[in-house]
Image (cartoon, rainbow, N blue to C red; front, side):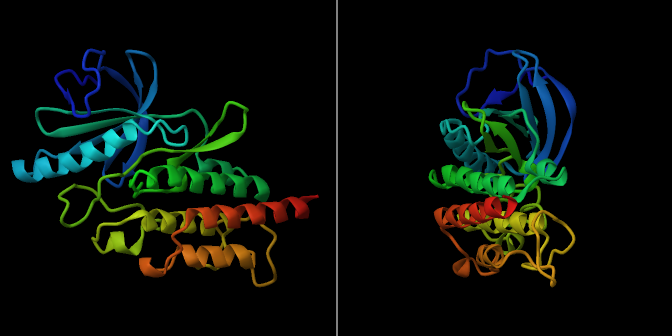
Length: 280
């Protein structure tokens, strides 16, 4: 794929070679289709998202571009290792928008738990995912499409596992936004997003709660037979503390939803301590 003739929208260097070798599809995100590609210029692996705005009238297209540009320009200056770096955002003359985000090496969170792992490790990774969200929310940004496939498990300088957020759906896809696409990925998408309302950070917390429920496969909410990591009682329920945490995170009404990521991290790490004791 050659992006020659496209223009950077977030002030990045236009002089680099803009050719990419496509390695394969990554799927349809909340606002466009993504592929895994290699930048011919320096060999970096990137997620290349394509969003066709050509069908929108000029006024609507400019409104969409303004929202996307502001959000991704903020992420480009974030410099937090828990959020994959934005490589560029480029617009083609025909109205196709290309967003390039570095794709870290490592398995996704879904691949980690699908392969089977111990509860203590999983709780640390989930707590780390909550911490990564706090980096976004601290800059008034919302991921809007958080799923186990959009978290890559990398490593920090000490070799410890570190969740990294990828495939950001920062600009809102709502009935009024004009952005083609869908508002999120079921079952992680929050009810307010499905209803076409603009979502805030609580939508990400809802998604994280659904991820925890999926991994443990308990009845809060009813998602049996998906995860088998934790020893449960005869009623096949997840641990009570995890269930209470998930219930608060996945309340249908955002006003009743747990909104404190610090509280969520603390709750997960308390369970991690218990998991470590159970394993010993």
